[in-house]
View 1 (cartoon, rainbow, N blue to C red):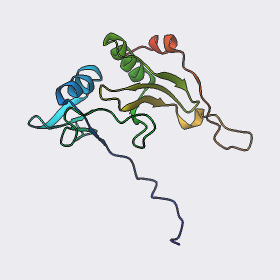
View 2 (cartoon, rainbow, N blue to C red):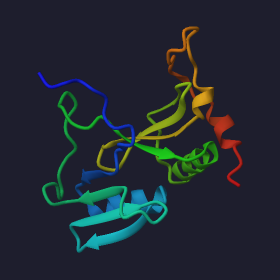
View 3 (tube, rainbow, N blue to C red):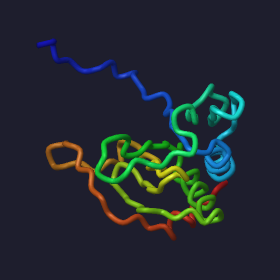
View 4 (spheres, rainbow, N blue to C red):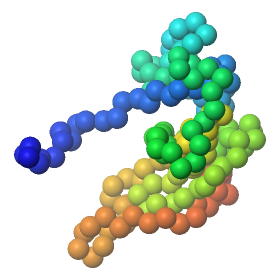
Length: 164
């Protein structure tokens, strides 16, 4: 058995690449609603989007999925991709964008360490839009262990957050 040791703490998940059935519809959602910027496009079959000038955070393609259906319930695959917002105000802006586009939420939770919005993209891919509280604010047990929880998120309180 290989030696068990922690992964390098600098490792990060860099991007998600999704199979979509309709590239234009996916671009309208990820760029038009969420506000990601198109960084590169491969004709009518693929596109790459980012925040802040990175090469890409999200890849979209129809190479194997043009016109396809989402996987049915009860099958394996991606549960959701999580998009980390830098501040609570930025998450509030995301919520305002979703509401303006009439995109329904499937859930909204306060996890103690983070606040999260849950939804599906137009192809049924699960998304979590969230921000992390500073680590010094994370809930802990008396012995110092992490004590995450799931409670309803106060959406009205989030909407009162100043977008700056």
